[in-house]
Length: 332
Image (cartoon, rainbow, N blue to C red; front, side, top):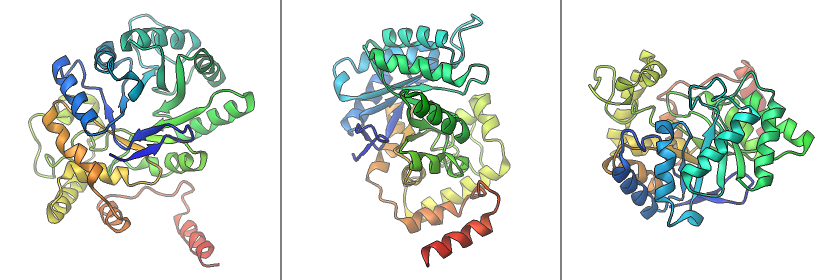
């Protein structure tokens, strides 16, 4: 296993992060424990969770499996998704954050959360209200570092500005969606992360299984996340994604690499990415994902794979001038 510094924190994390979204749902406690141990045996020390995964059950299971190695692992959890029927059981208000962090700490059986994410941007809560609440948690020692998941680049940049102006604990990590068919993060989020020394843990590196080798233009399996969950069927409904998946799978076959390994290695190879978030329903699904650790992707291969997909446009929509400007800067 290789380890990277998480942003500017000085904390070393494995360059694969294991996501626990299946804990308590597709994976019962026994299978979750086996997957956790397999990841630990491989050197993974980074585990991602959320307070709404399996209605809190994922945090409970994660709390049990880390009991004997709490000081050796880095754990995340999140707040802002709905977790109850009460009108205020959602969002990034001080009230909801303070209630939720106590519940998460109890379920995780720990006195601190290493990395605490705002799961989704809350449009009705003042950003400085959220950031001051998070800063209080850092000062109380209940949270060590802060992060934002599913935020736009302008939202992250605004938060960093408020934190700098008001001397508040700032976001040290972002968690965007990023894979070969979903590359929007390349436009502004990943450049922002590099510029501001933010850690990046990228979720959905396999496109919810689209890049696993099971899907193509002509092949649609009867089971799987895209088939079984409406959220993913909508997210990956564009027909062009299946054409990309087919080209990618053919490429993986040509070079003799499992498509799961290759898809994760491609995400991992972006210079801004600290760790892709891998996930599984059972131990057998972990083999190909963990193999990405030992796969070395050179710049030429990354470019070849990237060309199988559609590169997102420039943030300024003036790509031709941007390329010309870079050429002149390199050669002046």
